[in-house]
Structure formats: C-alpha cells, structure tokens
Length: 169
Image 1 (tube, rainbow, N blue to C red):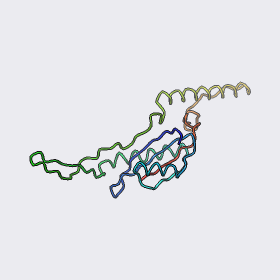
Image 2: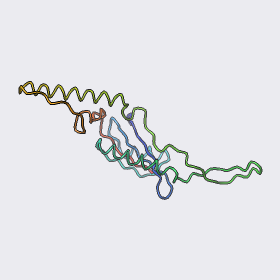
Image 3: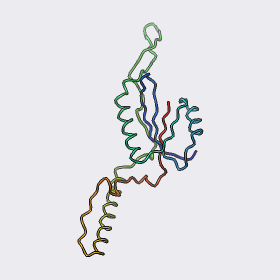
C-alpha cells in the first residue's frame, strides 16, 4: 500500500463497542481486500466501507463524527483492575474512558498559514482576472471578494486523489 494520510474518529456504539471512522487520502486507489486484511490484522472487525467522498463530504463527515465523539467519550465502558492495597485483592472496576476521540497523520489538513496564503493568492488572482477583463472592455474592474465560490475556498488538497471513507468496527 502506498503512503497515505488519515483522520480517525472513535464513535461509541450503543452496545459500548468502539467504532472507527477514518478518512484516508492515498496516492493510489485502495483495494477493499487489502484494507480489510490490514484491519483484521490490527484487531478490528470485518466491516470495511470504501466510499469515495467529495471535499465537501470530507468536511461534513469529519465534523459530524468528531463532534459526536467528543460528546460520547463518557459513554464508553472502561474496565480497570482495582487493587485493594490493604488485602491485595484485585477486582474489576470502571473508570473514565481514556482514549483519544480523534487523531490524524502529521500531514493531514492545512495550517492557518496555508489557508491565509491560499486566500491571498485567490484574492490576487481574482483581482488580476477582473483587471484584465476590465482592460479589454475599457470598464473599471470590480473589487475582489472572497466567498464560498472563490478559488480560496478550494483546498490545496484538491489536486490529491479523492479521499475514501473507512468505517471499521
């Protein structure tokens, strides 16, 4: 399997089991059998969902499960060994859940510096495009605006292959 980037969120299911939602960017298409073999070797269940997602779907999916995971952290049954220091007796008890609700690879996402640079580049590109169009028609160039349909709204990751959603249990 080629190098990839990922964002992982843990969801607590009603039965108390932890379920992983993983977004993956890979330079090569992921094969279901290969991903399933890796998941099983890592101790996960056999449910693997390889669904390609658009950049907008990536954001919604990550936000939905990251928010849900933060709210559910206390719902996970977390068993611990409790030792009675006086008698030495060991019993099973429970404690607050101790796991990361989400994690990602080091190269996942954009830094604020990257976002600002993309915004500056998009605004400059828009300004130059409008100035060139106005010069060809002898009309004043309208001011540049940044918004959801501007080039700055597009992620620099758009040149990467489409991400894939993995759901492991």
